[in-house]
Length: 245
Image 1 (cartoon, rainbow, N blue to C red):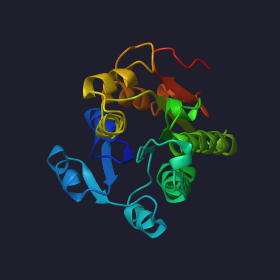
Image 2: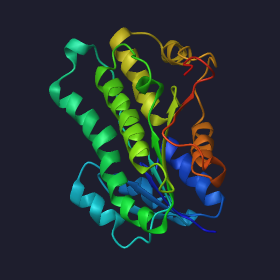
Image 3: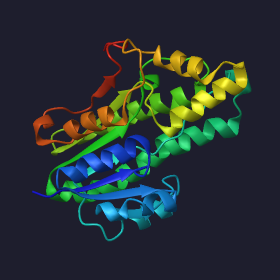
């Protein structure tokens, strides 16, 4: 059975790997994102695309309009910046909450009527290990990812027994453009080499390396599969065993 899968932030990083993974299973995939050029590159792959700022309620409604009932929603759109707590501005803090939490809430809310109507559905939120433990210099990011895990659990509890499942994945640092910007930030702030900066992030997990986006996509694919029908309200940590819960 071909499913309709929507992936936010679907043109880059984890989102792009996830789009490809679902496409390869034969699903109908719709990628949302803000970068029209990056989205256009997906169209030759048979992926539908829609430009959408997930923090804009009207834009989210427009992006989902006309879609048949969504079977799988992957809330991947997100931002992540680091700074000492005292140097974190209110604007930066609010922006993390708007993109990482409000965006997921708006998209989740949009797909619920259709999922309720068909009596099934899977929602996977892309959180972070920073949503399970506190990480220095990431007050805005960690707070937003903790909030996303909380949204996941609350939605799962409310929807338990309806056939709709809500779970999260919590990866450590992944080899994406987002992490590359974090490395650049470390270099600029500390004067360390890029190699040393990347090594410091890789050391955050027992793996001793950055995750590949495809590793996260594989976990998302599983949580959205019929084989995970009994899994609900979970935040799956992907870091080689550093955070155990």
